[in-house]
Amino acid sequence: MLEEVKFKVLRYDPDKDGKKRFQEFRVPIRKGMTVLQGLLHIKEKIDPTLSIRFSCRMATCGSCGMMINGLPRLACYTLIEELKTRTVVVEPLRNFPIVKDLVTDFEEFFNKHRSVKPYLIRIDTYVQEKSNTMYLQSDEELVRYVQFAYCIKCGLCYAACPVVATDKTFLGPQALAQAYRYYADSRDEAGVDRLKPLGDGSSLLRCHFAASCSQVCPKGVDPALAIQLLRKEVLLRS
Amino acid sequence: MSTLLTALRTWLVPFRYGLERWSYTMQRISGVVIALYFVMHVASTGQVVGGPSVWTLPPYEYAKQVWLETKEFLANPLFDAGLVVLAFMIFFHSINGVRLVLAHFGLILKKPTRPEYPYHPGSMSRIQRVIFWVSVALATAALVYSLDVFFKVLQP
Ligand code: SF4
Ligand code: FES
Image (tube, rainbow over all chains, first blue to last red; front, top):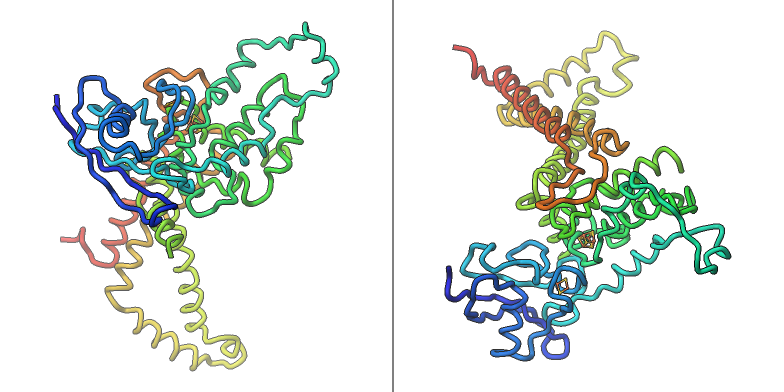
C-alpha cells in the first residue's frame, strides 16, 4: 500500500491568464480512498482555489466525470489504488469546454440530450391527468430498454467518443442511447416520429462504431449497442 | 490546427479503449489508403491505355510505349511493398466491413440485458470478436501470400 501519491492536476482559470498548466500536489492516501477524496484533500488542506464538481460521491449524480490517467472516469468511483501508479494525472473531460480547472460546461451535451425528447410521448395525455393511470409493462418489455435507462448523464461516453472529438454536430452516444431508450419503451407512442430527425448524415449515421462509449460507461449502459439498434430501426423503418 | 491534432489523436491512437477502437482505427486508415490507391490505380491504368486515342489509332504503338514506360516506373520494390500492405488492408477492410454492416442492421449484437458487474458491453459480442479476428487472420494470410509473390519469401 502506497503512503503518498502525486496528483498532477490541470489548472485553468479564464479570469487569470487563461493558460492551461499542470500543478503537482502530494496527497497522503489510505485504503479505499477515491480520486475525488484526493482532490478534496487538496482543496481543503493545500489549495482552496481548485475547482471541482461533485455531489453524491456514489456514482449516482454524474457530476464528477474527469480524465483520470488519460481515461474518462468518475472521480468518486475510481479508487486511487486501482490505478496502480504513483502519479495520478487529472484533467477535465475531453470534448467539453472547460469552465475552470476540472469543471466542464455541459450545456451542449444537455441540449443534445433534450433534442431527442427524453420523455414518454403519448396520444392520451388527457388520461395521464387522472392520478390512477397506470401503463403496465411486462418484464420482457422492460428489459428492452431498462439498461439504457440507467444513464446518469455523466458525459464519460461523450468524452471518449472519437467522432464527437472532431464533429460537434454529431449528437453523441448519450443522447442517441436515450433516443433508443424511449423508442424501445412499450409505453411510448411516438414511433417513427422519433426516428425521422435522426435520418440525416450527422445526428446518428456519423457513428463509426468505435464503441469507446461502452468501454467507459460506469453504469453498464452500452450506448454503442443502443446506437446500433437505433440505426437498424432508422435504416429499415424511417 | 488544434482540430487537426485532435483528429489525429482520436483517429489514429487506438490504445486503452478496447478491441473495437482498434477496429475503428484500422478500418479508417485502410479505408483512406484504399481510396488513395484507387485514384492512383485509375490514373496509372489510364496511362497504360493512353487515353481514348488508343482505341482509334491501331496498331496501338503509343499504348504499348506508355505501357512499357509505366511498367518500368512501377517496377520498384517500394511499390511492391506498398501492394503487400495494401493486400492486408483490402482483406481487413472488406471482411471487417461486412461485420460492421451486419452490426448496423442489428444482426450480430447481443440483446439488451440488465447490466451485471463487471460489465462487458454486448455491442462487441463474441461473434463480432470472432469476425474481427478472422479478418485480421485472412488479411495476414493475404500479406504473406503477396510477400511471396513479390519477394519470394516462402520459396527455398
Ligand atoms: S451512457 Fe454511461 S457514460 Fe454516457 S452519460 Fe450515460 S452513464 Fe455516463
Ligand atoms: S459525485 Fe456523483 S457521480 Fe461522482
